[in-house]
Length: 283
Ligand code: GUN
Image (cartoon, rainbow, N blue to C red; front, side):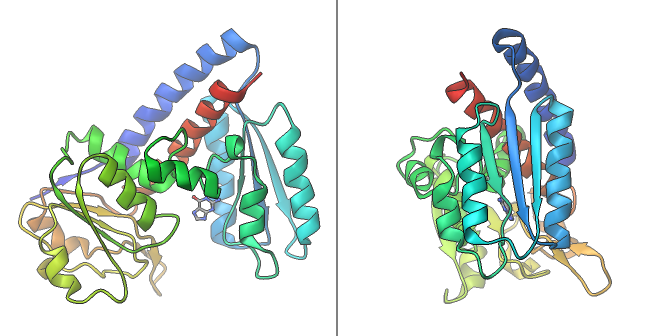
């Protein structure tokens, strides 16, 4: 029987710490950390995330602004909004919810956000900082995973860590953070040969492939730590991770559930990055 890593509880703990630090920040500086969230178009999942981000800001005592722009927004309109927010002293963090509608150039948008306000850590400058291990902002999802691992008392140093998926948002930065924690890291992807065998050698397995129930019991070593970053919606409407929880749980030592594992942590890490941005660059 695995120990279930309770992301809701750990996230609430960290948010309470951020709230306390925010109160001290406001008392000292006389203003609140400020986050601007931009969403373009009507993707329902993105709308839920944006609403949750606003709610989290209220909960920890941040100032926040939400920009819900129509799907027809032009590149110039979006870039000039970012320009304005870059110059706004009340705003310390800016995020533009991805994915963007197809006519918009995602790279140009990410490049436009000032690196010191890039609380998603998606700007190539911040990506590079993560690569060399000298960073202020951690990408939110991998940072959430690391916080879950650390707060569960799991040691990473010297462990075989396998990350499934090589996305810029999850897989690549995840591998880098595990490496910084002295793990021995392998990244698997769609072209990996014998993925089952590689996964079965993992002491810590992080799944971020976006395929429901991709990780089955035969891919898991007895006693492994299993972190499920996937959020897949089944035809039935049920949410399900990348790991077949029922099959894998009895073999694991620790496992994150979906929902209630990594999910609740990502917005909390965004709050952490926004507070950091305000501490470093606030006037
Ligand atoms: N879309 C999915 N995850 C994220 C995220 O962490 N940040 C932004 N901006 N968009 C996303």
